[in-house]
Every structure is written in C-alpha cells, then in structure tokens.
Image (tube, rainbow, N blue to C red; front, side):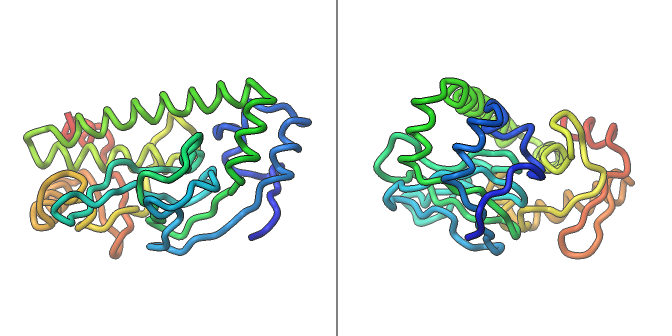
Length: 229
C-alpha cells in the first residue's frame, strides 16, 4: 500500500470525500492508503470480516454472489468514484472483484465510521452515494428485464460509456469493456453467443467499432441510444 495523496486524485470532485473541506480531508487522508489490484483479484471476499472500505479511483469492479445452484450472479458494477465496503456490518455480503487493473483508496472501517460521526457532511455524502447506487441498481434491473437482447446489450454499452466519461454527465466515445462476453451474458441473463451476435450486429450497422479483445468505440451515440430504448 502507498500513502494517500488527495491533491491530484482524479475522482476528488465526485467521490464521497468531495463533501469535506481541506482540514477534514486531511483527517481522512491520514487513515487512507492507495492499493492497486490486478484484473480478477479479489478486493473484498464475501462473508469475510468487514474491516475496510474504499473509494475506487480508477478501473472497475463487480459485486457478485453465488446462488444456490453455484452460479455467480453479478449484482452491481462499480466505476471510478464509487464506494466499496460494508459499513456498520460485521461481515461483507458480496464478493468484490477487480474487473480491470484498478486503484483504490482504502480506509479502516472503524476509522471511517468515526470520521462519519465527527463530520455530518461525510455521512450525508455517503447517503447520497448510496441513493445514487440504488438508482443505478434499479436501472440495471430494468435493463436486465428487457425482452429484446439487442436492447440489453446496447444499454449495457451505454452504461459502460457513461462510466468511462471524464465528467459525470458525459459519454466516452472510446473505452475498454470492463466485462468479458461471459460476464456480460451472466449479467444480462442471456448466452455468450447472443451477446457476440448482438455486438456483431451493432458493428455491422455502423453503431460501434471493436478494437482488439476489449476496445470499443461508439460511432453513432444516437443510434446506440435508439437501440437501447
């Protein structure tokens, strides 16, 4: 781990710590450290003691659980500025895994909760983040519930593009897919073959371009939006 440095943090204005003034931020920085995770590495294991929480600085992560049939179910995607960890709980509920090489600011849970108690602005920021993530989960549930597989795939690509944008309201034109086709299929409740066919269809229609195994460019944002509707 490396000590946290807030001045040049790329998510400083969007993460939960954005609610803190310079003095309060210094208190948070004093207990935080940077840690890098490789793609596929476990960040938090399900049912482990909940001893830490974190802000995702770069990369992407997934929250998942194993169902009664032993199948992994992805329940949420976490993008830069997202908050990870189970506050006010003895154990973690979900497996948290790095989808790409990722960097996090990690804080001891007890110390973070203490700062929340001392600084109401941080508590409010956590609440707002929680509500935003609840909205994102509802949007994901709505996406998965759509009957048309092409709309599901297009909608997922749009969510990736929004998450990869440098500003909260933007859409990235080029980005790396954080999920494999298998993971996309699992998330969308379809098959790998269906995901591959729909990606090929969108590319053939001139909506997207694929570059290598994971690179993707949106050629026509309007057409992708229409396909996702």
